[in-house]
Image 1 (cartoon, rainbow, N blue to C red):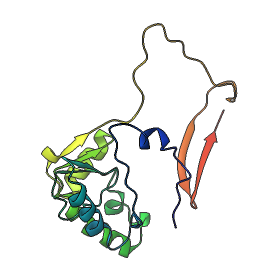
Image 2 (cartoon, rainbow, N blue to C red; image 1 turned 90 degrees about the vertical axis):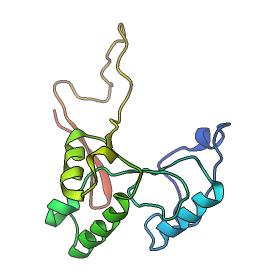
Image 3 (spheres, rainbow, N blue to C red; image 1 turned 30 degrees about the vertical axis):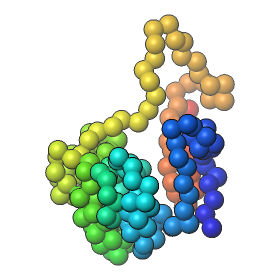
Length: 166
């Protein structure tokens, strides 16, 4: 029932080194770990990378997971009591991954300290764009107001919002 409305995967789907496989499994369903492991066993990749922290069970290959933070472990208001329990259970699986990537040094330290994942498994992979080359000009997008501004991207009440503050 879920349809992709955020990303254009056509360039990836058509790449010569990509074998595109879609499944009806829900990304957060009870059977997700088993179903994704079953799929990985069937296609037998040399490694499986997930942009999420749920461990595919019995995948038959090394697994690399993404864990952005462990907020539910130290901010009680972030999730319900049940949500915190489920997150802790999921982290037990995350700890069994061959590697875990995260996007900031602060998150890496928290994951090591609070999630019980060995430091040797937690790797920092910064998101972003390539550094500017010498001679590249910086141009301000025309839509921005004059003067200083901040761009904040976040989720509130199931909507993504942008705030510009001059």
